[in-house]
Image (tube, rainbow, N blue to C red; front, side):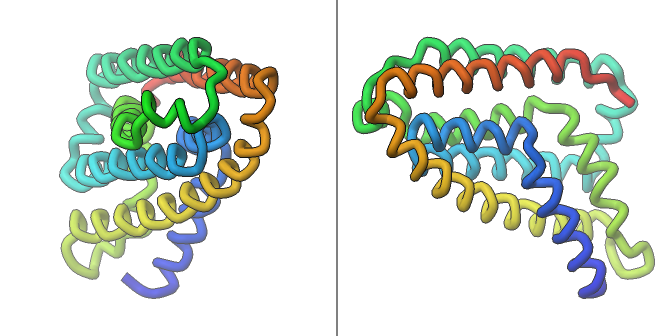
Length: 207
């Protein structure tokens, strides 16, 4: 692949990553409500999930999901249910300070949540299947390997952006945790965000 192609790919990837979507909002919400470590763990989990989508696109599993309405709908419904579960959890979160929350919300739990949320979104698989091949040079080597390389580059930039977002949002959250009323509304807003994306995912079509 040429350097120019990689540059265009990274620019497009950055623009897509900073566009507010489920992953971006998930990292932001976790960072504001639980601190930067929670946001970074969540972002790392989401990026780990992207490894699965990259491999799926490279070996053609995403194409199977795209062509099978049943497979798409099963994953879609599972993803929506998981998002609703996260929404309910957000509404049930207490107004305890971040230090106490850290005990019940370990980084591993948040990391696992990020992986599941990403893997249970069939639109991500289809997106990778449509996005990565646009930057593949058919006459320059093994196509699946090129797609894996592009997928790794996408993951690296996404992790960098999610980490920066976590630090910025976490610093804002540190100032808000001192006010129980504000913290309560942060949790409610987080629940509404997850609920919104769950409903939106349910109405996604395989096209």
